[in-house]
Each structure stands twice: as structure tokens, then as C-alpha cells.
Picture 1 (tube, rainbow, N blue to C red):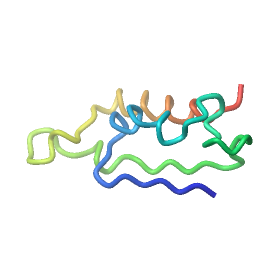
Picture 2: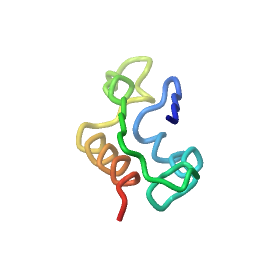
Picture 3: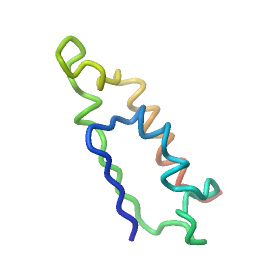
Length: 79
């Protein structure tokens, strides 16, 4: 089991560090040599921050959020 959590991150920022956090870019196995059996991705609260408030820097538009989640999950799929 590999647990990773980054307080305050949104999907945009997660994509920028994904390959460094899970260095085996082919299958995202984290260097263990095996692809994950199960994966939970918890993003959305920071992405949904209201864009005209103090947390606007964390806001990600819905269309981009969907694309980012797709990219994150695709990173872990075994080809």
C-alpha cells in the first residue's frame, strides 16, 4: 500500500508532481515492479474553490478538472 497526500493540492498541481511521486512512469507502480491492484484518487475540494474568493488560486474549471482526473487515472493504467 502506498499512501500519498498533499494538503492544498488540486488536480493541476498533482499532475505536475505525479511522475516524481510515483517514479515508474510505465504503469505508475511507484518502483515496486507491479501495477496497482486498486487505486483511490481524492481530489475535488480544492479544485472547486470559488474563483473570486481568497482561495481562487486553487480553483480549476470543471472541464479541466475532468481532463486532469482522466490523466491521473490513465497514468496508472497498464498498457
